[in-house]
Length: 302
Image (tube, rainbow, N blue to C red; front, side, top):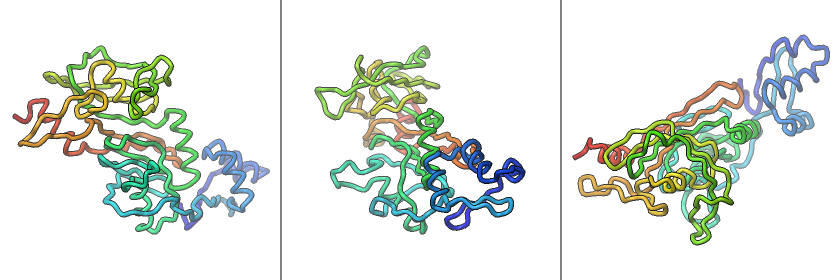
């Protein structure tokens, strides 16, 4: 239970029955709570660990600067608790500033959300999405959560599933694309499959095939820049709306193009809660432009 800057918890007999309570607390924090040694040492040094009878108090929620200027923008919160926040990233919005000083980013909007909620915590995104890709983005709300979630990302323990609408009829046999990705020396913004590039694996875990187009469900084992877009284009199935990688323009619906970006959306995010360990699966419903494109290509709209 959170009480202001402190988290109160009851670690049980493993600590209460120990001869050396301090050593038992440290062991419990490392082995059961997954607290990194660096954070544990700092809490000890700053008096951020207190033992009261059978209760352990941890100073996990000290006030912190947001680290970025709050700028109001409508924000769809998919999940929030004391440790983490998951929000929907709309198309056309970058996750973080690129140095140009132009445009409101998701980080700006999250800072404004914290400010409006009275939360004094740093804005810490755990992963990113391309500017034109929609889907859920995970934020850590304190140093402990960031350390645990960053390690989960490194260990590939955070699962993200994407939906992509692509050109051509994807064969059922296409289940794994294991091809290295590097920079395209002829185009600063592009990536390409390159023998000297970084290891990259894309898994196709489901598909729906229409006439001349397909919907594919994708999970990533690696998180290279533009990975889904590069891999699918390389095997002959570029994403609709993805002009950078040779994708076709979306068809018109009622006189307007149904989609003006690459047809890629993060459908859900699955991760273990950094404190409780509970597995959370946060869904993000398809945006309207993806729904319109699917309906147009699958024949649901004539």
